[in-house]
Length: 63
Image (cartoon, rainbow, N blue to C red; front, side, top):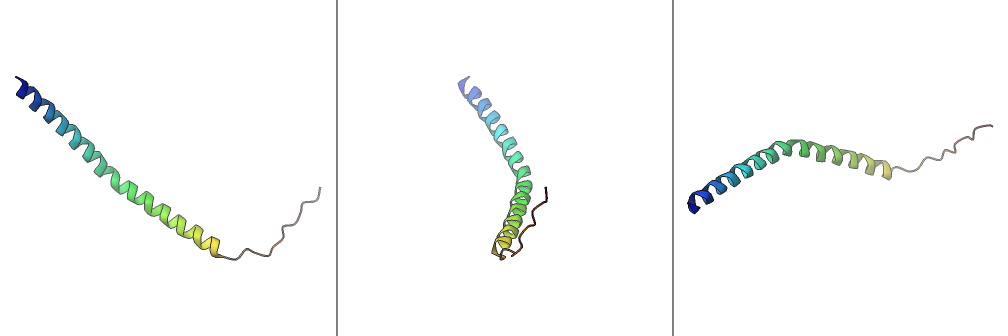
């Protein structure tokens, strides 16, 4: 009786792990896209930091 219970528990565990693995595989493309987008944004911000600051003085508003 114990062996059957153990087998049943193990099959349930395997099924749960397979379900979890399938979900992870579904999530990977979205995560790759997000990382790619963040990398592009990071590169753009680094380029902006390399540019010299403009020599423009903002005009003050008259009250």
